[in-house]
Image 1 (cartoon, rainbow, N blue to C red):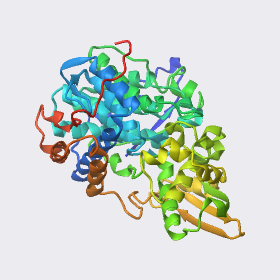
Image 2 (image 1 turned 90 degrees about the vertical axis):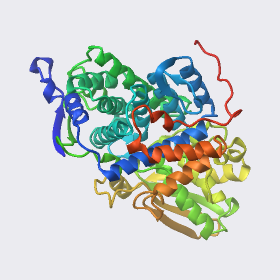
Image 3 (image 1 turned 180 degrees about the vertical axis):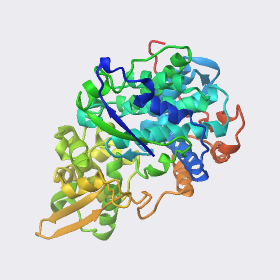
Length: 499
């Protein structure tokens, strides 16, 4: 990996394009380096993972609305939309499929200086690959680029510290991945990366307080903007430059300010893009920091059947800064303790999630969030006894660059009414590569079959799994096989809007 120092430059310094971060990203995207077998296998896993969570969400409100918008923009050859056989313009396929993938907060994650769901790169890259009639090998290369750029940016540049939403790293990474798929020159990808970043900076209010359905749409919007940025750049249109380093650019005014300095590591020319292997997926439908806590709560449920609401006096979860302040009681969001809160809010509430998993000993993407489940009196009583605290050691481990030490869990102390205390801890989720049961191909397939069964018939499930596992062999025009089509009668008409 090569280090690229990044700082703000005055306009009169005339920072050369070749020295700008957006150009360096474009160079990585344009590098025709081969993709290794293990990266190819993980790309296949993540396409399965995305399709699994999309299958479970295409009957939900955000997915229905986004699909209806996409279907109003037919195109030839076009791109496919989860659930239907229609072909639509690629930016709208990226939009609809991006919403479907993101709605349940149930696909992959990478956490470092910033947060991310790198699987959000797949819908826009796949949509363009389908429309441009590219091969499976082309798609694999594009997805490897998208993951590489996303992970490298997330390791180096914090957005949330300045209340900028994490999708500001997704616009550039998706544009870079699309550039790889299309084999575009560095100059064109450079312009698209700048445009994609410029149009995808937004505040984190979408993940604060009463969280709305926009949480699912935010990454889909970034993917849609990446597709449009590529289209404009291919037509010779240019972007604000330097987009990162300019004196009125993103770093100077949205991030660390005019005196900022970052160190961004990107692959050298000819160096394989392997960042996807650093990412991890979810076994449970909830914010990633909740994964380990669900697993620990299940363990405690089985080991201590006496942990009923009437016997617990308080529960203290000691964890990282992020978990405490974003999805814990440190967020100071009363909605995180409100049984009438939206599903999007509950899946960002560690007090709620730990309570339900402790009581039920399991977790379900629908039943665990049902209004009746959230409103159960004994659950509400116990829920209000759960608080989080930041523990400096867990914060340090969260930010560690050593994969063997990096952790997303913490410790819990449950004080019972008789004065006794139960203490336990967990570092990573069971499904994490270093967890008790790391996810492998069979787990991705099981997740897909479980979530797809209510929506797809058996033949469609088998057809998709066969196609995706032959991804390196798929010829030009065969990428439509990576779509999934719902059973007759499953999908109703979407709501009417402007178009």
